[in-house]
Length: 117
Image 1 (tube, rainbow, N blue to C red):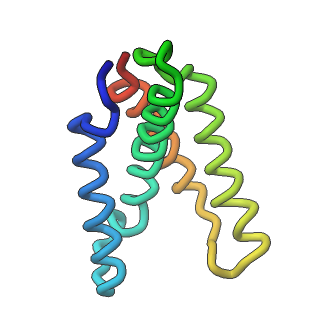
Image 2: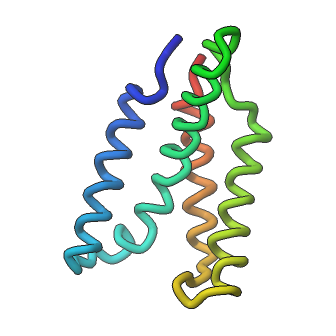
């Protein structure tokens, strides 16, 4: 079984995500990287953690891969929640359709490169 949490992509994305988080807290703005970087990296990180949790929870699923419908559903759920629902109910969130594009690209990358058996 390949552990998704030691996948080189996962570790790199997690590191970049952390750096973007720290830069945001320090008030450093990097244009589109600051605007869309975290959204681009979010689903590969979240889906890798979900894949890991499924694999360790059941011994017979050590080589499990997330089905494409689950990746698409997660993209749609994130788009709905973070770009439509949450902006409707709180001022803390703002909706941006380009964030949904970033989620979709991140989900596609996960499905293509990171969802390994």
